[in-house]
Length: 188
Image (tube, rainbow, N blue to C red; front, side, top):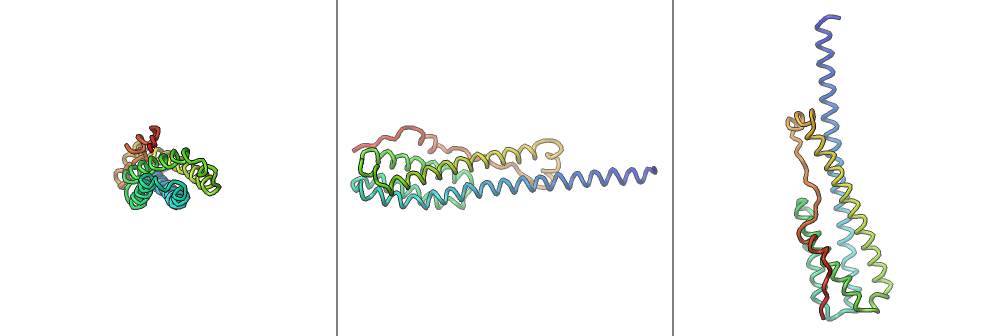
């Protein structure tokens, strides 16, 4: 074989490898976007359930308006952060989780409310949504880890920088959600 053919074959292999690497990075970046959209879907579902839950509780706990207003405020704040960045969503999500814990703790003091079928169904739906939201977060963080690893490992790191691929943030618990893990204190 002539040296020209060998050089052309080497160049073709390099070009094909770069194209494959670029397409792989684009695919992984798309997976990250899709996973973040899944989180948004679950957050929207959660935000849609909350007004129904609050209205059900209102009928039983009329003098607990402060708790209910806190939940509504947290929901509205979280909804306004839907178009924000990951950090904004994390913060709003944490505040809303804390507010929801207080409304469920409130239900412990109202036996009629705990027995109400609407409340039970809404609580079940919200619990299901929270589970789906946790799964969506885990999936998102897994795809982010895969993507970030791909752009940091050789030879991906060389081409990722050339093509403008940047690391993506993980979806982490905000300070408010860390605080939301503590027991809720309901005072009368």
